[in-house]
Image 1 (spheres, rainbow, N blue to C red):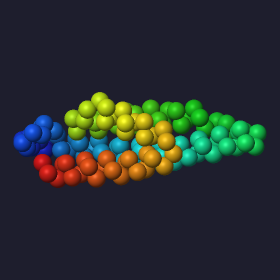
Image 2 (cartoon, rainbow, N blue to C red):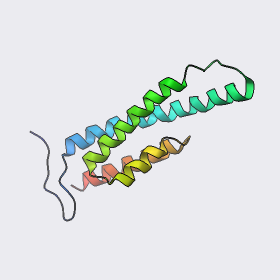
Image 3 (tube, rainbow, N blue to C red):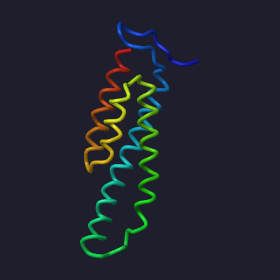
Length: 118
């Protein structure tokens, strides 16, 4: 049995348990991608600034992790009935160092408040 609650005035019905699970996956993915992006920046500084290829292997795993972040964002966005524009902005935040941490906190608070109000 799922924890579906009737839609409040003007809010579409969502499955609260699925949304909470999607939020947890999003939070983990956003944190990992945020750290991974910082490692990618370090790799670029080492490579282009110091001609050091110690982290030359990192861009490909980071790309895969970013795809997981995109999937986590889309999953949460569809569960919460976000518009496409909002999902794209959250995904793009994962491309800017440190911004992914801020957006993850902001979206987590927003989703938790929305779920508490249902």
